[in-house]
Every structure is written in C-alpha cells, then in structure tokens.
Image (cartoon, rainbow, N blue to C red):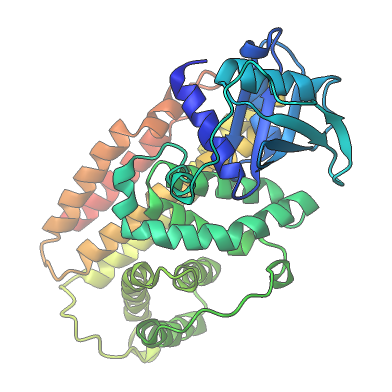
Length: 428
C-alpha cells in the first residue's frame, strides 16, 4: 500500500473508535493486495462495488465497522467469505502495520468469525488521543478548512441527520435511492471542504424522509428572533402569491421548505440570505399579477422594467430543470443498456443533485444582482458571463459532455442556451 492509503486507513480506524463507519473490503490473493474502503455515510454496498472494481477477486465483506481497544468489529450486511476474519487481520498487519484482532458479526450482532490474536508481524498502534481523533474527522481534509464558519454548522447537521438517514435507508423507508444519493453528495462535499454545498444538499433530506416519526425525539433548537421576523413576513407574502394560484405553486412551497430547513439546521444567516431572493421573486410575481394582488409597498426602488424581465426570467428558468432532466434521463437509459450492474439510477441521481445545487447557486446570485437596483442590469449580465465560463470549465458538466454512453447528452448546451436567452432579455 502507498503511504497515503496507509494514513487513510489509520484515520478510518481512529474515526471508527468514536462512531460506526461504513466499510467494504475485497480480499486479495495475498493479504497485502486486499482493497479496503470506508465512508461515514455512503452505503456499504456501494463501497463494495468500488472495492471489487479495484480488487483482484470477488471475495467481499461489507457493512459497518467499530473499533474498541485492540478489537475491530465488522458487522456484515451479507455473509462474508470463509476465513475472512484472519485475512482481514493479516491485511491490516502486513499491509498497513496495524496490529488488531478482527471479529466478523451478522446484522444481529452474532459472531460469525474470530481472527484470533492480532498479527504478530505488525506494530501495535498507540491508543489515539481525543485530539488525534478530532484531527481525523474530515478524513484527510485540509486543516485550513477548520476555520470555515459553516464547518461547525455541518458537524451539527451531520450529527443530527446521519442516524436518521441510516435508519430510513436500512428500513427501506421513503425514496431510498434519492435519499442515499443526496446524503452521499452532502457528505462528499463536506469531506472536500465545501460545507455550504453540503448544508444546502442536507436541506433537501427532510422532504425525502417518509414521516416526521422517523426523526428521533430531540429538544427543539432555540428560536432565532431574526429568523422569526423574516420567516413571518415571507410566509405572509407566500400566502398572497399562492392565493393567485400560480402554476409553479408546488415549486414555490418546496423552495420555501428548503430555506426554512436551513434555518432549522442552524444556518440562520444562510436562510436569511436565501429568503431575500425568494421574497424578491414573490414580490415580482405579485407585481405581474396586477393591482388586485394587494402587494405591500417594498420601498426597494425596483428598477424600471423589472416585472417584465423577472417574468421572462422565471418562465425561462422553470424550463431548465425539465431540460436537464431530459438529458440525465437519456444518460441513465444509455447506461442501463450498457452497464446495468452499476446501478445507473443512483449514479444519475447524484449527478442530478449536483446540477440542482449548481443551478440554485446561479439563481440565487442572479436574483440578488437583478434586485440590486441597477437599472441597466450590468451586474446581472456580467454575472451570466461569469457563470457561462464556470459551465464551460466545470468538471462534472464536461465529464457528462464526454461520457462514453451517449454523445448526444449535452448539459453544457442546455445551461449556456438558457443563460444566453436571459442575457439577451436583460440587455433589451
């Protein structure tokens, strides 16, 4: 194993001392050629497919890992290969120099195999200090990310949601495929230091859970008076808009739920910022509905022609998800035809979440620019050019463009065409 892989495995052992960690291992022909992978939230069966791809046999064990003292306890979701406990012990000892005893259990906690004593050829690891464990929590994330103010918010959200998501996914409750995809996207974003994206994705988890009863009873967080004031005004305005029976009523309600979920998770500042754009959108809708809509005076100095341009922007923006969904569905169908065993639905669901987050960021920024009071819309037009450049350089979007399954899939063109049309409307 490379030193980086050894460091990652030792970090995983340290994390598993503090809380359960999902794992998968593909046993090699020799102990040192085995492949082991871990993750805090990604489903163990998904990790197993990854380990199998990188390994040299089809002998797999996967499930949840916990570490107590010198003992590695592996709860397996499927019957492990015979002799796996000793082989995993030897892998840890000979490949990574970790002297541990390994016990394999079934889902009910019954012992399936015991490796016996730890490998004598390995160094016995020192018991990690609490500081060392904390330093491994991000599994290799740069230390500089610790100063990100969103990091603490993410830690609180993860602690609250991870057991709920795990329970729902294991019990098959709710939209399990999308639930796992969204949560995997959130945790991967956080592991990479993108806490804001992780928090935004986590805000969508609430709507994917089956019922409120799936959430363990907890003390409600203290109400923030700033949010109470903003939320009250926004909900009143939303009620006025919904009374006009707009065609996008469901989308508006869903958008508000996402914003409100941000506040519930503790990200009040982010929720307040998002609500400003949302409220501006609602006011523009009431403007377009005419004087009978009983719109309150905004006192914001809305630039001339805003209603007309906002109307076009909203209409055009609502087409983007449909157009993107068509491209992702086309990719999913092509993958189903060529690699059905790779679970294309889960993979494309993760892609969809990433694209939704990208579009949400773009819409929030564009809303702020349009409502800034710039009557020439110069800020918004410049912003569109910036996002156009981002689209052309975004790794995921470019990867989709060059995918090997269907070369007609072109997410880039969908986004750039929409931005060009919006830019033209603003410049008119």
